[in-house]
Length: 540
Image (cartoon, rainbow, N blue to C red; front, side):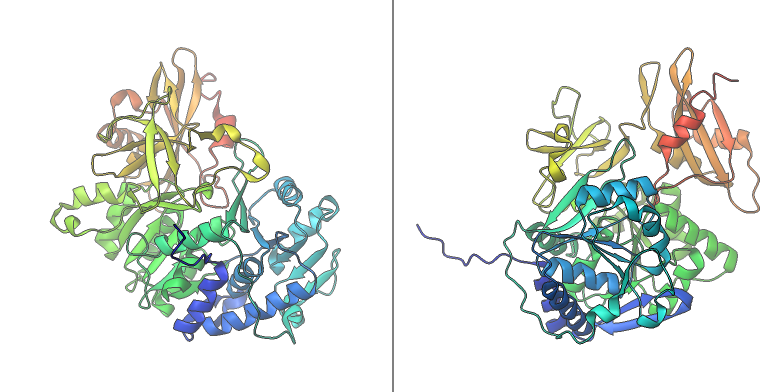
């Protein structure tokens, strides 16, 4: 029997061309340095992206070539997403919070040939210029008038690169398995590993993640990805929002509470996406300033477990629906979400908060399962904990250059998370396998202890790590930062914890610190904290 349907692979360029046709005047707003704003529409985006693609083609950039970006969220970075991937090359987003050793390692591992860089990140490249021999071109993302007077690098101006190029481009029809994006894991336990995204997987992810099963974008949406565009393509929002005609608000480097509140208010943002730390900082600013976020209706929160106390705060104080989500660099990244459902209207607030603080249920195309140490599937009873695995059409089958083969088991990807799944399919990640504390042969969840601490009125942020113990192997210790104007009462905090977790879970020490270290994506740097405090209990 012959096939009845056309073989018609979908590409990232199809998203852009469709957005320009269907929503030509829909706005893309970018916050720029110095308080400036840039605004244009999807048709403008197509024209400038076509200019970029024409220039790259004229310069001999071949399909499969890796071109890197070192930039925050703004319209030029968005043009690079579509221009590089659409003409068949690979856009490699570099994390602007990397140490210099990691930056040079990743550039060399990817063999990047061009780097497009924001002016504020230029010193990072200048510091490693002698260590990245594959890079042939350095393009500064700015106007000609903003080019620096001197640099140790031979720089080119992005706007000059686009000038005089045609605003139409003959986009190639690329096969579904053509690579289009490259992002590296955080590398907290070794060198970062590359995840190579494909044209087909990226479009499928955008179709499903932008649908009502997940982010629910449409022409009424005003979407603000606060999560950086260098972190897993800003959770895919730069692809899913244009596909469904949403207005895009790109916050640039202004991720502090004051900048975000102003942008939300000015642009009437109604959906925004970031890690919990961002929403904690915004809440602190709103409380100190007395300002509001009236237009905001939903925040999608991933990258770390959703603290139940913040879920409740955003509901009661701001009437914002907090949607817990889960995903990884390896899952493109969105996989599960606690989408608002009709059933929630009949729940008590506490029942609803329980679901919102979970990672939700998988969207169509994603399968999740928990296994014991022998590889046996475990029951979905909301209690039994197991090693989380996943699979699907936008979940990687292998790392770039074939590394990390031990992470792939019987057609599943081993996530490294410890999780429970309830009878309704809701996922709750209780810890990373490397962060679980083993005390006397029993497991203690650092995440659950951290979330419990946030119910104390003085605690701003908490981090729980395992410290060496002479009798119990490991015992938990808790590091906390305190809200401005508040005093930590350890006895009260311990009482709060005991109401939420088993008594034997209580930390052996509670230590107040000025601040806690975070990765570029907002996660706590537990590796270095464990190293610093591993002998804390032995020294007492």
